[in-house]
Image (cartoon, rainbow, N blue to C red):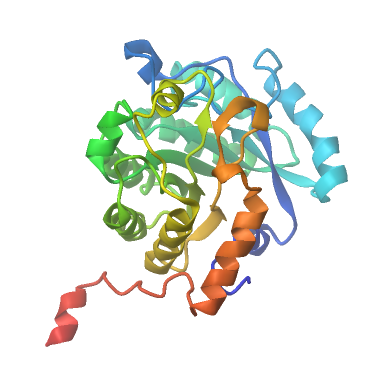
Length: 312
């Protein structure tokens, strides 16, 4: 199983030589897309922080609340402070620095992971992160929500950015020693297999370090939920999604760590999630299919570095 794709847990273990686990941090912030419009059509009112502490808690309090639970359940003693909800670089620079510094001061925090949008990456924010990383000795990871390379789909989702912003953000981050995690959704309405393949190719060419694959869930009380319940959009069948996941992995650079392949959302918050099947059952089925078909991550990773010259 571990040979079929590069698991994120193996990536962390190789990097830190011990078990590491994320503690979600929820800040009292918003998203720039919500200021200009109603936001992305799939985004719930509370963003994605379904399991985080209230944003009224200080960063230090959220870390203190998460540590004992995670240590007891997973055995981790070192942590990633995961600034998860909404857009965590969308705030004044001084405020941003204060929040990140509060997490970096915690001696049990070995990495700070910042979830944000591609159109909210700028040199001065990256310079502040470099300063904090150097001062406190913690690694920096930046998570970018690309979702798909299909800019027509991005527009339909009211995403508020296109493909160029993602490319620009990665190139800016690459000037530093930070790692990059890219979020993608492989079953967005309107996307086809070609979009899945090209997404794998682009993130591989830009050398993202980690990929987080989401199966599209539909949160209640969202624009996408209204469209779904009124039959205006359709979600592909489960078998089609599994085929897309496996194909995505085959085209993906085998050195990119895979954090997840299926989304998770509390049942009470979802109008649709994973075809009503537990994520781990879907993962087991995916692994079984890959084993049967001799599939593995990077099987079709042969398209970079002037691949057409092989025909000479």
